[in-house]
Amino acid sequence: VENTSLRSIGKGAFYNGTIEYLYFNDPFEKWIDIKFEGTYASPLQHYYNNEECPKSKFFIKIALGEYEEVTEIFIPKDVAFIGDYQFCGFDYVTNIVFEDINSIYGIGEGAFERSGIESIVIPPNVKKIDYYTFQNCKNLKKIVIPSTVTKIEMCAFMFCSNLTSVIIGENVTSIGTYAFKNCDNLKTVYNLSSLEFTIGSEEYGYVAYYADNVYTKLS
Image (cartoon, rainbow, N blue to C red; front, side, top):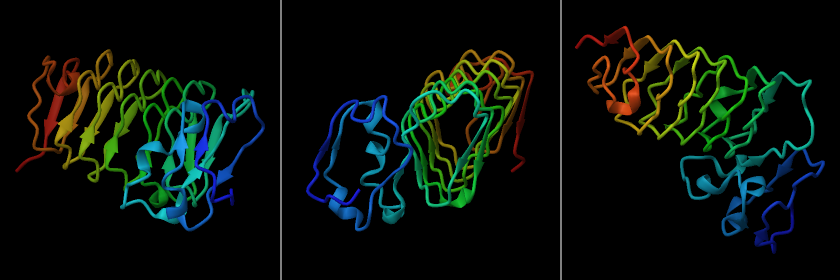
């Protein structure tokens, strides 16, 4: 996209279209005031002013149409942010492959909600797990929250009914309401953070509510 006079992309602008990739050319500052409306045209809205994200690497992937035969999604190395609800409902996708996992600086709200992913490595530069990011991923079995993450937002892993274990990274200071609610098989929690989890407690987003074992880092 090269038209720097563009200042608005309306709701559903690419709905039912055939666009697969949409790139914003440098300099990024020329795009900072663009207004996006609605799910189909707003995967970057939360990261416009994130100074920690390389401004030359913003990327939108418009995934529209029928892709039932696709089971693996390849994220190119020039991608810095996976947009809001980008792969929501992709229940046939079981695997995410990053060409360069260090290039990812953010994963948006609901990005993988109701997808079929069985496992995923949270990129090491991600600082929070956003709202609903992995909600209702019923094939997800294990998750490792890296040390860079400080916050797990509300309902981030809610209804991940086959999630059996989670490692909470050492710098997590906040876990939102219902983050792990209805994760009935979440029996093992490894807590590397300074938070104090109690088996059977609804605190910290139900992270230890269903647990049989909570392992805490030795001080």
